Length: 139
Image (cartoon, rainbow, N blue to C red; front, top):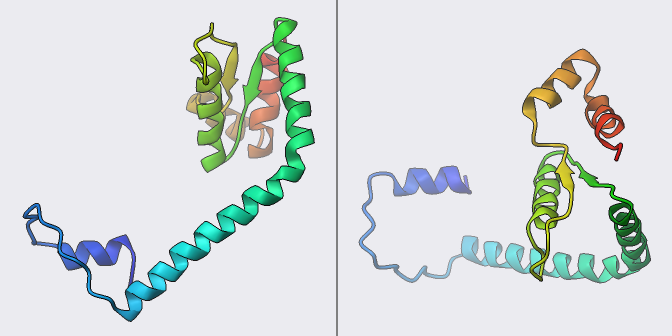
């Protein structure tokens, strides 16, 4: 057994003294180290492969810029962790990103749980973003 549940069982009833003891080398630590390194390497490979997406990212940025210049807004959405990314992206547009500037109109379609659940219930989960885009996508 490994992971947070195992750690909780192992640490249950122990008090933290403020000192961290060195973890002696063990086969389990070695495997975890190897997994961490493998994740780093995979992340590097993913970022290197993503360079091929640069033209599409530029095109998306140009499309969003054109919409904003025509008094439009940016709608973002996603499922799971991508929903959090959509909310973060919208927050960066509304707040600031890299420079101080006026907020840009942006809405994350993942934040209104009442709307999401009503649309999923009354229509289907596949329609939760499409219905919002049709309603909110108008200038």
